[in-house]
Structures are given as C-alpha cells and as structure tokens.
Amino acid sequence: MHVEKSAHRLPSLEVQAILAKYPPDQRRSAVMPLLYLAQREKMYVGREDLAEIAEILGLTPTEVASIVGFYSLYYDEPQGKYHIQVCTDLPCALRGADRFMQELCARLGIQPGKTTADGLITVEAVMCLAACDKAPMFQLQSGAGLQYYENQTLESALALIEQLRQDAATKRGRNGHG
Image 1 (tube, rainbow, N blue to C red):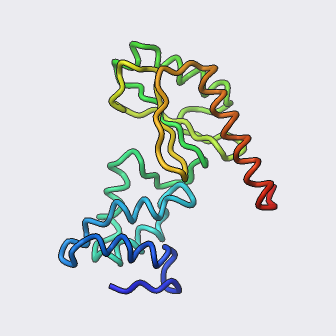
Image 2: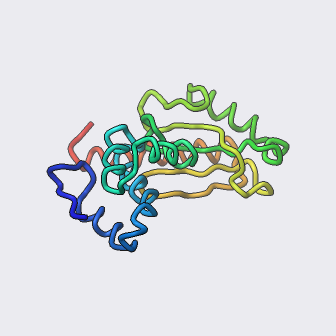
C-alpha cells in the first residue's frame, strides 16, 4: 500500500519502512510500531492518528483505539514531553513507592496522572514494571525512547527532572523558541 504524505500526517517514508517488515497478509501486525510513530512527536495518539492507522491497516478506528487503551505506553490525550510512570504495585508499595509517588507529585505541584504547568513532566502510577526488588522505580518515556530508573529517592528523581528541564530549555534556545 502506498501512503502519500499529502493525504496523511504520519511520515510516509517511515510508514513504508514499517510496513515493509510485514508480509502483505500480516500488515495488521504493524499496528504497534505505527502507534509508536504517531505518538513520538506529540506524546499521544489523537483521533486523527487512530483513523489514519486504521485506514493504512484495514482496521476500524475502534480496533486501533482498543490497543491504545490496553497498553500503558500509549496515551490518548496530551502528555508532558517526559512521561514518568511509577510502579505502585504491592511489592513496590511495600518498598515505599506510594510515598515516593506522593512526595514527587507534591514537589512538582501536580496530582498523579497530571502534567506540570510547564507542560514538560507527566507523572502517573502504573502496575508492575518488573523491578520489584529495586523500588521505588519508574520508567521514563520521551521522544528518545524508554529508560528505567531504579532504587530512586525523591532527591535523585528531582535531580533527573531538573536535568530534563535544562535539556529542554537548551533545545528550545538552539531552535530559537522560548
């Protein structure tokens, strides 16, 4: 299937590269890489993205939306540039994850699941990131991918967030924005 840039928002060459990895009769399997591609720039998958991916793969927008709803790495509403997901499953909670999450959100001036006023940081609770023995821990999702941070303290997390903010300010300055 040929995808024209003028008819779609997703980058045509990247869509073609993803689709080329799948046999024509298994093209539906490309749904997750296409969702990641759609989310990469604005940190969420909008309705127009669902419709476009559905059209490309011969699915309904509802089928594509069900995948976004199932996986914790896809978002259907705007998020911060940096998305912090703190594991609060029982083993992590027993190692202080709940308190860590509450204190982190309080210091950032947000509620869990919300984004900071500068639009850079979203913090949310998730279940099981498979590092129970290293809690409190979180995964950080950004345009650069996914990174894990284990054995965190409030101070180490805030230092990382400060570095992320400095990096974002530097990039804005180089691009002539902000």
